[in-house]
Structure formats: C-alpha cells, structure tokens
Amino acid sequence: MERSTELLRKALPLMSRQAAALHPVSYAVWYAYVADVNSPLHKALDAHLAEHGVLDETATEALFRRHLADPDADTATQVTDGVARLLDGMQASAAAAGDQTARYGDTLQRLSAALGPADSAPGGSPPLDEALAHTLQMQAALARLQKELAESQREIDSLRDEVRRARQESLVDALTTLANRRAFDRRLVTCLAADAAVIGRPPVGAPVCLLMIDIDHFKRVNDSYGHAFGDQVLRAVAQVLKALTPEGGLAARVGGEEFALLLPGMPLAPARALAEKLRATVAASRIRRKGGDADEHITVSLGVAQFLQRNPALGLSVDEAPADFFDRADRALYAAKQAGRDRVVVAD
Image (cartoon, rainbow, N blue to C red; front, side, top):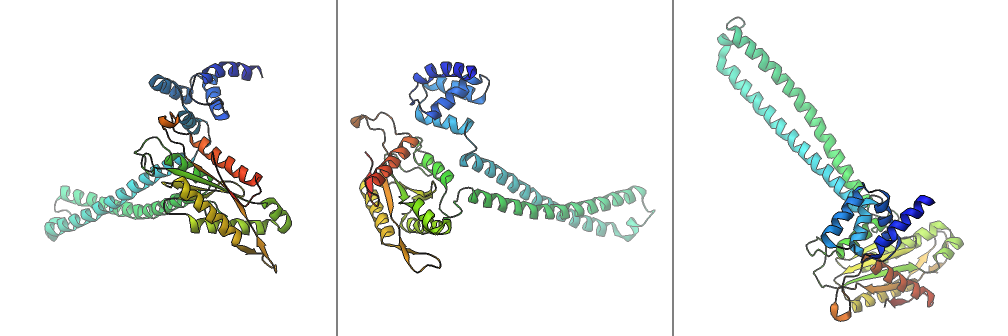
C-alpha cells in the first residue's frame, strides 16, 4: 500500500501536465513509468517527451499497447510475418542447394567420362584415385543432404500453412465467423491513424462512421430457450450483418451479444440509413427454434457515431481518440436501449 501510494504521488503530477485525459490507460502508463526507471516504457516515454513535449491520447494508447497490454494482433502479425519470411528463406535455400547438388552430379558424370577407363583404373594414378574417392564421397553426402532438404521443405510448407491458419483464427470469432474484438481494434486503429500513408486508412478528411449493435433482451433468450438457441440467434444476426456490410467495411463481434460495424469513407446520413435497414431486417426476421414449432422474434438496438476529425472551425484542435470514438457510439447504443430498444440513436 505504501509503495503504490508513493507511485501515485509521483505519477499524478506528471499525468496532469499531458494532453491526455486522466483515465485508467493513462494512469497505467505513468504508474509503470515511475515504477521502473530502467524499463523500455520509461525510455520510450522519455524519448517521446523529448521530441514532442507532451503525451497525447494517441501516444498514450500506443505506449500502453506496446509495453503493458497483452500481445495484440499487430504484435502477433509481426511475429508470424517474420516467421513466414524466415521459412520462405529456408525454402529458397533448400531449392538452391538441390539445384547445386544436381549440377555437381552432372559435373562428376562428365569428369568420369572424360577420364576414361584407363586413367581411372585403380593404381593408374594415386592422386587421381584419391580425388575420385573424395568426389564420390562428396556426391554421396550431397545426395543425403538433398534428401534431408526435401524433407525439410515439406516441413516448412506445413509450418507456413499453420502460421497462416493461426493468424486467421486469431482474428475470427469462432461462433459467428465475423471478425473478433482483436481484429476490430486493430482495424479501428489503422483506420483512424494520423499517418496518411498507413495502409488501409481512408483518404485524409474522409468520414468514418461506427455502428454499435446489441441484441435486445438476449439474457432472457438464453434463460428461456437455452444457450444453444442463443448461439443460433447470434449466428443469425451475424448473417444479416455480413449481408449488409458494404465493401471496405468491417463487421465484428466485440462482446457477448454486441457487434460493431466500422464504415470507412461513409458519412453519417448513409450510415444512419444503413443502421435503420439493419434494424428493420432483423426485426422482420424470424428464427425457428430447433425442435420447436414456433418462430422467435428478435430485435436489435443500434448506436451510430461519426469520427470527429481535427477541425479548428468547430473548435476541434486534434482528432478524436479511437477509444473516445468507440465510447460515443457505445453510449448512443445505450441510449437506444434506454429509450425502448429496437431503434437507432445517433451520437452527439
């Protein structure tokens, strides 16, 4: 308790001088900063302050993800990409070694033919006999190496397939086959990145909207009909999301019965229209219980928000932080549920 109190006393003044809010992520970063002056986070934070003067929301979240959070999708992707590049290099080396072995065998055959029976007869020339013996040993060794390389190549291909499959599975929700929360968070950060050169980011100034979707009374569905039917409902809503997601958008399951639809390049008006269409489509659907003789009526509530970009004319000096963008859409979703459910609410 004394130790944590002392760290809090040191962290708070540092936090208050930054351009980031005093939220748990910010506190975690500064707590870790004052707790260990030799940590990579401490050094990275010092370097950022030396270059920029203050720590804003984006930098705070980046430091948290890199040094404190569990390994995220970006880290996993970097690792698997590195492994894939290594395996590709090994495969290329194996192929090159096989080609060298084949060429060396051809050279030996031509040398044997050029020597002729008389020159290559035992006792004809001791130095030549020794050279021929060594070359035959090398040929046998290269043949064994080629066989081992062929087996290694098959293992490399299998490992590379495993890497690709593991990467894909780490970003997909197993029940609905939508993107999972990890994939959504990764795409959200990329989509809202300040660097216009980031791959996957919409053009500078292009609108970005977010829909948050929650199945109404889902707990009651589970309690009344069981989790198997609850899973059936989740899959059915996911199918509607898939069908209505426009090109370039990302539909994800971000919680138990909560979904998100990220819409890069889409303004608020069409995003709201899409939300209404999604709501109406689910409301008009009926989900038949397995073994039951009745269809169940399911509805969803939706919150819609447009990303707030830097605009001095509107008093916005910096872009909205990804967490704040997500939170606004989530609060709009909560407002929709508080207002009676089965409706769309647009965030302030």
